[in-house]
Image 1: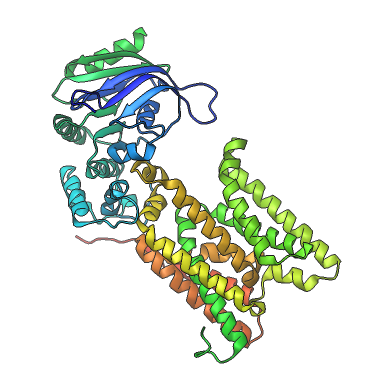
Image 2: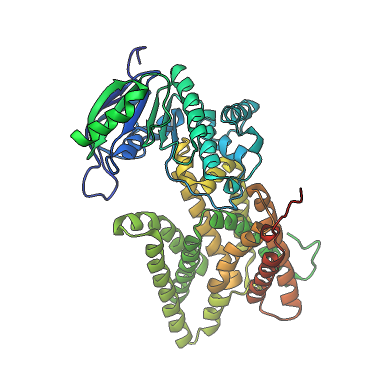
Length: 246
Length: 276
């Protein structure tokens, strides 16, 4: 991979879920470079989550080519997922799930640690750093099921930060957070993007925005209908008008 | 193996069998309950039951037949759910019903042809009828389970917590998951002669359910569940043989009684009031 090469590259990609009658994303072309902050918007069912799952190598690509960090997610899914952080949208933990926050954040590093190896002091250091960044170090020994939805969301974000990802994907990361927590998380994500790691967020909430220009991608019916740079204050209007116009 | 402690040969064999079976099943029970795959355990225990019944009717050895059918079902479950495009639970329900029907069909045929004793040992098990080779096989699968568990502990715990998140973190979930299914299928088949096809399920669920009432971490559950299972199983084996009681049903009843007590006294159900 050359220095200026895109970290994520999708060429005419069509994706479907196993057993689905129709493709969910169609003919998607997209490039994401180091340090970019990408915001994916669009109406429900547009294919936004599917786009993230495709990048993470969790879905079969029926047409086109895709490259993430120089790897093909279709054939090297595990390899890609060791490099990609992905915060999922839907999670539901039983109140008595027998795992604490520290254990769960550490699990984010298991793929990187690899088979037959135990976690080291370095892994725990990364876990503590991630918990500290998210401001949840004090609840590291608490059981995940006993936390609020917002705290659980922060734990999942911390899990992906501890992983030291080369790409960070987040699906509705603000959905359970209050406005102050949204702003705080947004600042953290902004710093991550500025450090050179591309951040791609699927979101419907535009009240907390990074203070840098973002690339706005709007999807509708499985297609990308808009892909352009925008100022944080314009994002909401850009997404809205593109969703209506297309 | 334990002759230096228990001089009575029959009792010694029974205790050895119960010891190995309870440790192996209890470890797997933690995985089954925490991964919410109890219907898989249920289906597989009845697959072993059906395999044993078919094998016994056709004049083959019970254990290999039970193992083969159980392993086949373990590896058929996933693809079958995908092909039928139905909820896994529905597919498992159909498979469970089929396995149960096959088992009862062949057991009825055996009873009709004067092989009632053989049939009843498949239904309820008979711990004192085990051969030394059966106990060695149980020891082997239990030790394999423990080794598998230690080698893949971090992958197993991640899968137990959340299969999807484990996959996202870059873990190859499929080999570990199928490894777990393989161990469950062999373990249930080997335990079939001890407690029988009808009661086998108790060992695969109850030790973990009891441990869960007192443990806040998965690590503690992996320690407490086998300890509980060993105490209950060895006690039931000794007590059952000494007082001529059926060991399998006695074990199941003691497990159930202990579970009820555990639920009643569990700290998880206590309401903590802080006074400030």
